Image 1: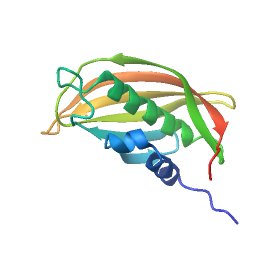
Image 2: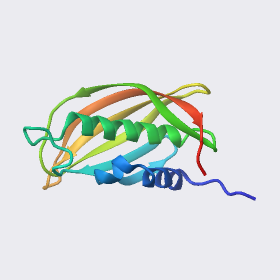
Image 3: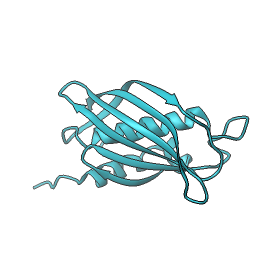
Length: 145
């Protein structure tokens, strides 16, 4: 008899398989059905030429947070893949970390729509809006053990 994994376990196991996210130091902060929060620390791996967080790193964190929120509502044995996303960068920051909170807006049989809000948290704990993203994902069959 198989036991279904919790949302947190499902996301944690998948995140461990993400080479890029591991390389960038991404941490799972929380995962519940339809909501996932991730953090990425500031480092020279995630900066652009002006030493702020690179838009590609911000976009990757938002995409993965929304994607994992979608994974928490996808049927067992399924993964999700992003087919498109749109992101608005609100401000750029240095130091501290950025956190992305992904939320499922609509979970359908063929598509899942999710959003992510990205905030910067400085070394003193001050939170500032960084980016907002909306994405469309599709459930796909899990193709690994």
